[in-house]
Image 1 (cartoon, rainbow, N blue to C red):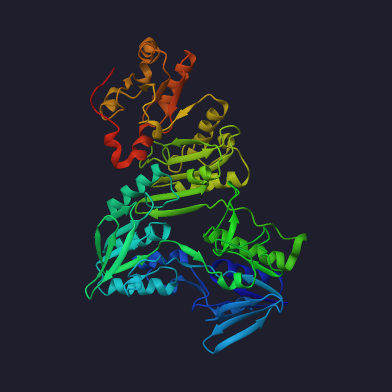
Image 2 (cartoon, helix red, strand yellow; image 1 turned 90 degrees about the vertical axis):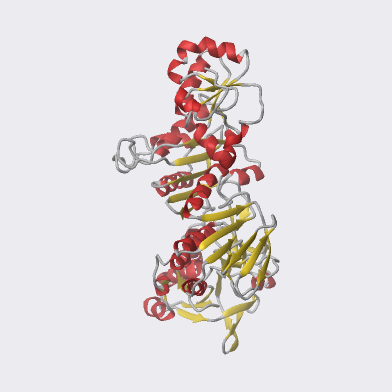
Length: 561
């Protein structure tokens, strides 16, 4: 059997290596258009910063090492430009001319190319992408050659990582993002933390604004924004997104959606004996059921392996490729940000009802030195507690919590089931009630109706309700919602008549700093017959939601007590 793999790196090399382990007799040919077939593309920004000193450290395998270890026939600088499904051949251009190669099974993992918007001046020699080892080397050469000012167009994962890397290398860095905030898949209240951290690093973020043009002269590029700002740059990193590199596949009749190849849960395309995986395919979202690309290394590697199983094992032994959760993580200075599952936007688009829970527990025991909050939110089905998505940010322990939640989602655990997870505990590492356990506890209260929530977005809607702030008087004085009644939660039972008089039949919206004391107060209020709701995540979430505009929301005068 001859198996041809188009494209190396994650999905392609996983498929080729797995195929060899399953069948020693198969002829396996890997066609790679570039000069490296197996490299750590997720490590590229860290070479740019100098944390990974040598570009060679990013190269995982070479054609020679793959031939020696796995007897793979790796052919570099072979750019596949056509497929003939009837003749079962692929055509590729090479430095020596075009070649036509027959196949028995074809695996397409061409990846995605950097999106190049119709931006005047984008062809400047100072504009670079960060997709290959060559890109990282070229950018680092510009840095070491004396570049002092950088503009990063796009604040997705790669854009933010590139910005941090360039800043670490000593450059002045501006980041331009069309979306309202950096890391657009991140929820608004956590994005505030990212912007604060980028600011602390000395990186300026221009969010909610488009780049209109790049003007070049001998000294620098000048990036003009829609708001009139002009940013001078010695180098520009283009990171506004990617597009699937699939024109040759579509020409062969392979079905695509928004240019990405459509595959089933075996990785099979619409054309017989052709499989596909990686950034150039669409995956079915595990939460929303929407078909979308998932440009992440983990799912790509796993899909490549399972495709090889399907080709060489068939329906009797091959496992199916699971729907994607899109679990991802990124470092921003001292902050770690991670996510899994759906965010608000995708849930809204899919018209899936949800409730959002916010918590701010410490990453380990509060009495152990170095305790710091895990800012954790989760979207759950309010009726059955299904976990729809989760995100977290903090200085430590973020990866652990999101990975546990992602595992729970894959195992179809409901949010209240998180209470029962037997997680490791020692004061330097966690708490007896871990953040994940606490999420389950709050979720159970929501699902059972013991806790009803209101949210920071509703803080300025002018609803006719009494705002009851149960923080201490000192906390209240640092900033509170206008017209709020301040009764510390420890005094509430004795002053329940004061609440009744102030409410005068209205619902009561209760809040504290993080949601713990307000839940206690909520239960007291419910017991006394009030229509009560508790602010999810308290004023800590409220401050994160409004960010720089929080001073327009909270006041320090007009205290009612």
